[in-house]
Each structure stands twice: as structure tokens, then as C-alpha cells.
Picture 1 (cartoon, helix red, strand yellow):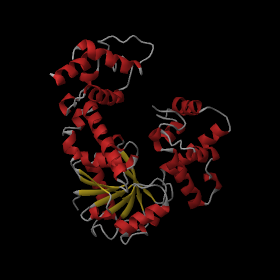
Picture 2 (cartoon, chains in turn green, cyan):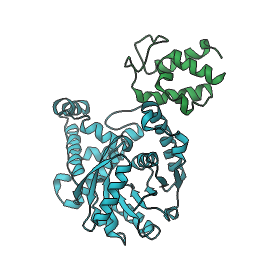
Picture 3 (cartoon, one colour):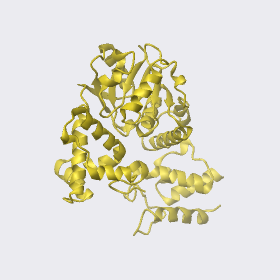
Picture 4 (tube, one colour):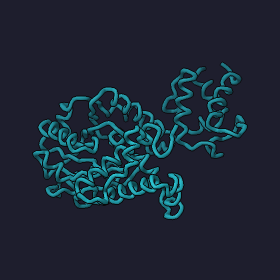
Length: 80
Length: 284
């Protein structure tokens, strides 16, 4: 699994919610107001279901889900 | 009295939020409902909310998600209430259902246990009459979502003792919540006004005076309310709103509480608000 296969999946998922914006890999989706923080849990569940991994207590920080890059790094870390 | 174990009856929206808040406050919780499906959905919802709390407010959630969850025992048997110190009942706003619940748990719970009805309109004095411990029955009207709302409307029934109020205050303090104590009349303070407001807002919609969005905007922007009456109705659940306004209508026999036909129609059509995705608004 590589960043090139992971990133498009996050981009597609986020694209359903964030319309009319070409999301960059390092756009902070919370700080830029694209989604509110309650959306974080949907990202956690999407990550777990799509990549068949468990997001554990210590991974449950907003920082892991702010950007496509951060989410990709989390997946790579959990899959390593 | 020191409270260790709390029984929660009903694993709907309120019971689920309560079980979570109580477990976070380190009480052992017995969550009772009629079906394993409802209980397993509740457990999933609690886990999801605890994880969200861990993300958004880690200081308020110092423990691991699993250790908080481990304090919640789900059961479909009232027999599990044999050692509870405090019970919070959250079943549907229908007298026949509530009466049945109290008849069932009263002989099982220890004599010292306090019963709190988390009702939105039904008389606490009437609920107390369904038990053999009327001085140990009070109303505790929690707000939704329970883990986020710091204030509780506490209702003193005709026979509710000072000791019972004291025990309830202790429980709330441990949960990090405060209360306002009011006397017992159907609807208390909050819902006698709120249910009428919501019902009248539904009439506005029915009479095509304004759209749901416009009604809510007026309350938010002109009055500074955080939410308008119709979005509040969606949050509470339209079925619960209808049951509550029907209770007020029956209790006061006053036509000002007659339920709006559009509200009845929406409930019959299965539009119950946020909890099933459709009410005055649509939710994903």
C-alpha cells in the first residue's frame, strides 16, 4: 500500500461532502471550515472500514485527520 | 448514601447518553431495554461518542474508551437491578408503559434505591403512586445530548423527600452537572412552554405562514436562540414531541395544548427527526 493508492480514496470520500473545492493534500479540512469536528468520527470509521485497520485510543486525535496527508500517514503507520 | 450502581431503563436517545455520562463519571451502569438489538445499537453509539469525546476533548476523557465501556452492563432482564442504588427511567412518554416499568422494577430494586423519572411531561406524583416508595421518587429532566448539557431540571413530586433531592444532587455533582428544582405540574417549566412553542411553530408551517427554515431563522437571528423550534423538534424526536403535547392536553384538559394535525401526520408518516434522518429537515 502506497500514498498513491491511499490518497485517492480519502479524496473521493471527502469529495462527497466538500463540493466545489479542489481539495489539496495539505488542506486542513477542520480549520478551513469544510467540515465540522463532528465529522471526524465519520473519517475514523471510513479509515477503519476502507483500510481494514483499528484506529486505537492513542490515534484518536484531530491532528491525524486534519489533512489527506495526515490520514495517509496514519494508514501507512498502522499498516507498517 | 453513596451511589455506586445506577440502573438506566430505556436505551433510546436519552438512555444511551445517560449511560455514557454515568460511566464517564465512574458509576457502574446497568442499561435495561426490551431487546438485544436496541442494546447492541446503544452500545455501538456509546462507543462512537466516547471515541469522538476522546478526539475533541481528551481532558474530559482521560480513560480509555474500553475501560469506560466496561462499566456498562446491558440487559433485557429487570432482575439485573437487584443491587442498584439509583434508577433513571427513560421509557416512552406513555403512561401505560411507564406504569408497567415501575410495577416491574419496584419489587426488585433495594429498598434504599431512588427512582428518577426522566420524563418530559408526565406528573412525577402520578409516577410515584405506581411505586411503594413515593418519597424516593423524583423527576430528573435531562437535556439532549446528555453528555454535553450541564443543567438538569429536577422535579419534586408531592411526596419527594429532602433526602431524595439530596441524593439526586450528589449524583448530578459527580456527573459534573447542576440542577434547578421545580414543583410538580405536568410539563414542569421547560416543556410546558417548549412543547407549546414547537406545536405552534408546526401550525405556522401547516398554515403556510413560513417555511421551516424561516421559522427557525427568526428564532435564531431575532431572539438569539441557539436553535429554532423546528430544528429543536427534530433533535428531540417528533414522536416524543407528539406524546408530550398529548400528555399536556390530557393533563390540563386545555385546548391550547391540542396537537397540530401536521405534527400527527408527520409522526404517522415515520418522519421522526434526526434519529431516523427525516423530520422538518433531512439528515444524512
